[in-house]
Length: 95
Image 1 (tube, rainbow, N blue to C red):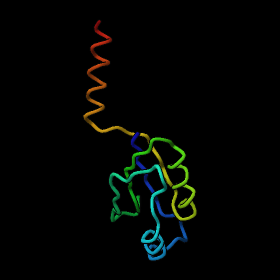
Image 2 (image 1 turned 135 degrees about the vertical axis):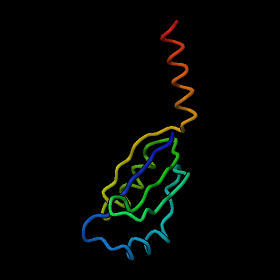
Image 3 (image 1 turned 45 degrees about the vertical axis):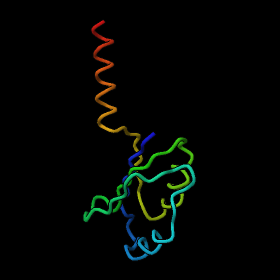
Protein backbone atom coordinates (compact mmCIF):
# COMPACT_ATOMS: atom_id res chain seq x y z
CA UNK A 1 0.00 0.00 0.00
CA UNK A 2 1.16 3.53 -0.75
CA UNK A 3 1.34 6.27 1.84
CA UNK A 4 1.91 9.99 1.34
CA UNK A 5 3.69 11.62 4.27
CA UNK A 6 3.81 15.39 4.62
CA UNK A 7 6.10 16.90 7.23
CA UNK A 8 5.86 20.47 8.42
CA UNK A 9 8.87 21.61 10.44
CA UNK A 10 8.11 22.19 14.10
CA UNK A 11 8.95 25.56 15.58
CA UNK A 12 12.42 25.50 17.06
CA UNK A 13 13.76 22.77 14.78
CA UNK A 14 16.58 23.84 12.50
CA UNK A 15 16.94 22.96 8.84
CA UNK A 16 20.68 22.25 9.07
CA UNK A 17 20.12 19.81 11.92
CA UNK A 18 17.26 18.06 10.10
CA UNK A 19 19.36 17.70 6.95
CA UNK A 20 22.35 16.33 8.85
CA UNK A 21 20.08 13.81 10.54
CA UNK A 22 18.44 12.80 7.24
CA UNK A 23 21.82 12.07 5.65
CA UNK A 24 22.40 9.18 8.08
CA UNK A 25 18.77 8.05 8.50
CA UNK A 26 17.36 5.12 6.53
CA UNK A 27 13.76 4.16 5.96
CA UNK A 28 12.71 1.35 8.33
CA UNK A 29 12.60 -2.26 7.14
CA UNK A 30 9.35 -2.92 5.33
CA UNK A 31 9.03 0.68 4.10
CA UNK A 32 10.19 1.41 0.56
CA UNK A 33 10.67 4.97 -0.61
CA UNK A 34 8.94 5.74 -3.91
CA UNK A 35 9.76 9.46 -3.89
CA UNK A 36 10.97 12.07 -1.44
CA UNK A 37 10.69 15.80 -2.07
CA UNK A 38 12.00 18.78 -0.14
CA UNK A 39 9.70 21.62 -1.21
CA UNK A 40 10.88 25.19 -0.91
CA UNK A 41 7.91 26.11 1.23
CA UNK A 42 6.99 27.08 4.75
CA UNK A 43 3.94 24.80 4.52
CA UNK A 44 5.82 21.54 4.03
CA UNK A 45 9.49 20.76 4.54
CA UNK A 46 9.24 17.20 3.23
CA UNK A 47 6.82 15.15 1.18
CA UNK A 48 7.47 11.44 0.91
CA UNK A 49 5.66 8.73 -0.98
CA UNK A 50 6.41 5.32 0.47
CA UNK A 51 5.17 1.80 0.00
CA UNK A 52 4.65 -0.49 2.97
CA UNK A 53 3.09 -3.90 3.43
CA UNK A 54 2.33 -3.12 7.05
CA UNK A 55 1.61 0.24 8.73
CA UNK A 56 4.04 -0.67 11.53
CA UNK A 57 7.01 0.47 9.43
CA UNK A 58 5.24 3.79 8.79
CA UNK A 59 4.74 4.16 12.53
CA UNK A 60 8.47 3.54 13.13
CA UNK A 61 9.36 6.32 10.70
CA UNK A 62 6.90 8.69 12.37
CA UNK A 63 8.42 8.00 15.79
CA UNK A 64 11.90 8.71 14.38
CA UNK A 65 10.87 12.18 13.18
CA UNK A 66 7.94 13.41 15.26
CA UNK A 67 10.22 15.54 17.44
CA UNK A 68 11.07 17.85 14.51
CA UNK A 69 8.08 17.49 12.15
CA UNK A 70 4.33 17.63 12.45
CA UNK A 71 3.56 14.67 10.20
CA UNK A 72 0.44 13.91 8.21
CA UNK A 73 0.19 10.37 6.82
CA UNK A 74 -2.39 9.47 4.18
CA UNK A 75 -2.98 6.15 2.44
CA UNK A 76 -2.99 6.67 -1.31
CA UNK A 77 -3.09 4.91 -4.65
CA UNK A 78 -1.70 5.66 -8.08
CA UNK A 79 -4.11 7.48 -10.41
CA UNK A 80 -4.22 4.45 -12.70
CA UNK A 81 -5.37 2.28 -9.79
CA UNK A 82 -7.98 4.84 -8.80
CA UNK A 83 -9.33 5.03 -12.34
CA UNK A 84 -9.56 1.25 -12.59
CA UNK A 85 -11.39 1.12 -9.26
CA UNK A 86 -13.75 3.87 -10.43
CA UNK A 87 -14.53 1.90 -13.61
CA UNK A 88 -15.26 -1.20 -11.55
CA UNK A 89 -17.52 0.77 -9.22
CA UNK A 90 -19.41 2.27 -12.17
CA UNK A 91 -19.86 -1.16 -13.77
CA UNK A 92 -21.18 -2.71 -10.55
CA UNK A 93 -23.58 0.17 -9.86
CA UNK A 94 -25.11 -0.01 -13.35
CA UNK A 95 -25.61 -3.78 -13.21
